[in-house]
Length: 298
Image (cartoon, rainbow, N blue to C red; front, side):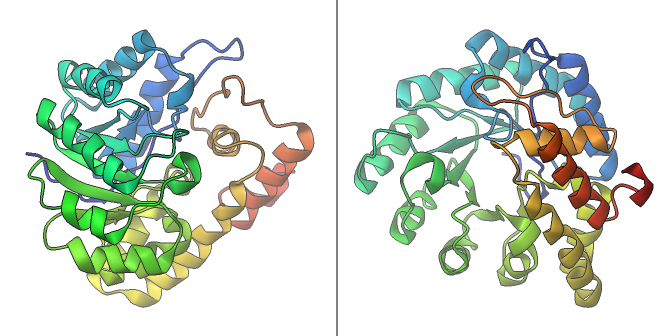
């Protein structure tokens, strides 16, 4: 079983202006983040607009990610769905493509109980072989993992990691302390919580802005994990400016930011609309404030 740790950026899924899947740009983006020094990549997650992708495209995304990484880093495949049956089908695609692990969140919209969430994962775990990163993302699912749920799931042999994206520091901190000796905990919103999470015992982070921050995200991780806290604090301060990339409907702002710095983020897909000129100007200002674009780019 592959061990997931370090910086695992979630990759956008580039689309053309006509909303077709742009696998060539996807390959270039994968190469760019691997050259940064990342420890893995995550595809077909929230950042990858997984809700807008059909099964044929999902299979192509998984296959392209595996072929393009060529064993350089592990590939984590987002396989979430409302039903366990559909999750299992998505995992089968990831297995066939050669992905190294899968990420699965709770079902969204139906608002099941925490016990039903546990049973949902149990059904999936009994049917698959790949290691699982469980994913707490309450603002998208309507369900907040409890510490007890994570504690129970951490005892499952196929559960290898947790991505905690509630943005609740007290919950993240408590979960790290509770399960870090059994599974690897990754922080979401690392541009704001990364240093605190790594200091508490998280093994890394999965943050949509890390491909924008680029090599400096790796510099931050290395400083934080080597005890160079002064440098880590400085870089955390710079990276925190990218929290303001939340312009328009996610991940449209991330995609524009990537395009502006010369990395192919691509167009968003319906129902998400491209940013207008005013919104693009805000993104440009954020990138300039973080030193990712020169001032004269205005």
